[in-house]
Length: 186
Image (tube, rainbow, N blue to C red; front, side, top):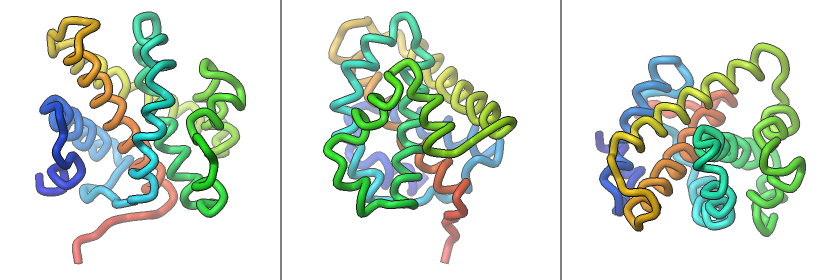
């Protein structure tokens, strides 16, 4: 519980804590993360800039493609974690990592770009990640729908941002785990 408090900080939306706990339990059950979540301040610090750039695209797509609007953010978190591990001295200087990734193949194909060209996945690993991200996006969308928030309101916007934030962080967590970064209690 303590690590969730650290991760969320002074969150503006209590719904985000529920999302964090649910995603943590699910990803732990499928062995995509460890019980103790990794800490990667460099990746976390990119969140606001990425979210600010992503939200207009994400909101535009949300009504017709809610799972993509949500799931793409999980892929973005994975990509930023991969960039951090590979060449952070270069990628940390990119003006806007979201726009950089989106413009490689366009918004609609950003998931494929990240899986193929950033994470270098093929075959079963490619398909498995697509399934995992799809499941996480569906879980988050279902939780969001059950909040019974009126669409178009400030509360709806804040809940959507909470969803994106947790998907970004858990995407980074999954990728850090896949690259061998494991947090253990000392």
